[in-house]
Image (cartoon, rainbow, N blue to C red; front, side, top):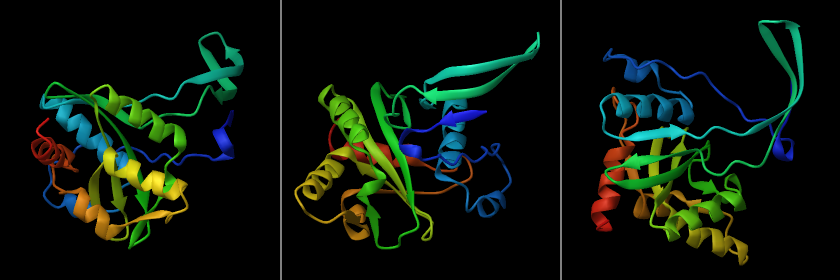
Length: 203
C-alpha cells in the first residue's frame, strides 16, 4: 500500500505495550516511545475513570482499493487529507484538554522545528475557547518528561519567528513546565503534573 505523507515525512509508529503490573516492568519499559507511554497511560486513566483522553485519528483519503476476495479489501494507495493538529485530546475534571507529544535526543534544549505552525495555531484557538493546551516533551537521552504549557510555547514560538533562538533551553522547560513522574500504572503520570498546572493557574 502506498501512503503519501505531508511534506514527504513518514511518521514512526511503535506498537503499544500492554499495561503491566510487574514491579520490574518499569525498568524493562525504559526506551518506549512517548506515544506508547501515553497510550498505555491513557488506557489506564480510562479504565480507572480518571479521565477520557484519546489519540486523534488521522483522516485518510483512499485512492486505490483492491478486492482480491469478496470478504477482504486491500488498500493500495491513500493520502492524508490534511495535516494533523495535535496528538491527543479529551476531558479531565470538566476541562477540555488538548496536547501534543514530542521527543528529542538533545540534552540541553528542545528544537522548535519539531512543532509546526498549524499545531501552534490550533492550540492557540483552543486556549481562546477556554481549553487547556500543552505539550508533553520527553528528553529521551535523559529519560525525563515535562508538561509544558502552551502559553510558554507561544512565547518561544514568536521569539523564534522574530529572529530569536530556535530552541527552548532545558533550564527554561524545568522552570516553566512540570516534570512528569514515571511509575507502574500509569506509566506516565502526566495528570498529576496537570493537576499542579491547574492549581497554579486556578483553573
